[in-house]
Every structure is written in C-alpha cells, then in structure tokens.
Length: 247
Picture 1: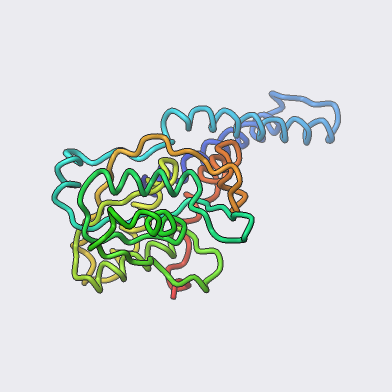
Picture 2 (picture 1 turned 180 degrees about the vertical axis):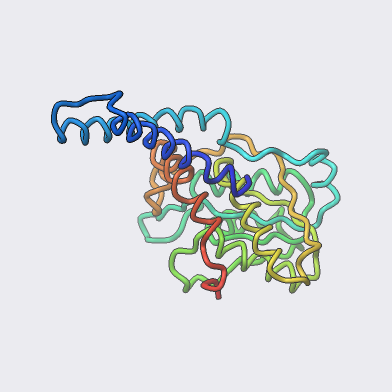
C-alpha cells in the first residue's frame, strides 16, 4: 500500500462524479427536473462505489509478500500480530475468535519466533497454547485501558515494544485485508524517529483469514461490512491521521 493507492478508490469515485457534473454543465445530460439530476447523481455515486469495490477485489485487496519472505521469516526473531475482532463467551470472558486464532496459528507455525508482540485478542489464543509459547516473550502490544485502538495507534505501540527489545526486524501478521495498511502504518511511524529509521517490517503471505461472525467489533464481523470501510475509510484516513495525536 502507498499513499496514492490508498486514495485511488476515492479519487476514481470523485472523477466519475466530476464527469457527471461536467456532463450536466455542458448539457450532454439534460434531466427535466433538478430532483432528477440529484437522483441520477446519487445513482452515479452508488454505481461508481460498487464498480470500485469489484475492481478493488482484484487490484487493491491484499498486501504483496516481500521477495524471499520465507527466508526472511525464518531468520527473524520477532513477530507483530495485529488483532482482528474478538468474541465474548457466556461468562463475558474474551475469546480470540476465528481471525485471531488463525493469525496466531500461522505465526507460530511459520517460524520459531522468540518475541511475539500481540494485541489482546491474539494473546488470548497464545495463552491457551502454553506448550508452544513456553520460553517465548509474550508481549502485550498496548495497554487495555485505551478503549478502541486503531491500527495506526497500535503500530506506534508495537514499534515502542521493538525499541525496548532492541530489535530492528519484525514479521507483520494481520488479517489479509488489513495487512497492507498495517505495514504502511508501521513504516509511517518508524519514519518519525531517527532511531527507528533502520527498522524492517517483513510482509509474509497471509492466506484468506476468516471473519469472526460474532465479533464484538461490528465492522469486523464479515467481509461485506469490513471491506468497504477498509477501502474507502481506513486506508485513506491512516495516511492523514495526525501522528501528534498518538500518545
């Protein structure tokens, strides 16, 4: 993901709507009533969003794995695992949900990481797997009293954890639709401090991650809900979100 690709879906929709306005001004399109022009405009926006979503499924959906990522993963001692939704059981205790469990399983299977920097949903899965996490550094990415933590804020805390460990390389795990943004956010944060400029964030291949149907975070419950938000809101927002607001 780049800043341009993050904004491209919105730019395409704006261009299509701009062409519609131009056609009205040039009287190429001549609706009889102002109300008709407004209705047609809404239809143009809806159609352009739908088309961009379909195109996005092919061109914008997932992060591109790094070249030779398998070997890079094997020679890395640190993994950053972003959470994606979580669930509650009948006792109001947190469950990892399908996404967090899948991400944890892939990370722990890919390499023998010594440091696992994880959001809470993933940590729940790790705590239930004591046999494979014994002797590893299980590190909570950020405090739990922050309320909802977006990916950019989580990325800042992940880098602070890397800095405290003295490590310069980490493999990044996130939902396959979120991974491109997660890596972008880590690089954006790292660029703000000369001490972090040489940090390397490895993008592995993430197979399709399931969605937690009963997620406590409504926007992560299914692809139909999550993907438009990712494409039209989360990605462009994370390119302009003021880093000064991240404490």
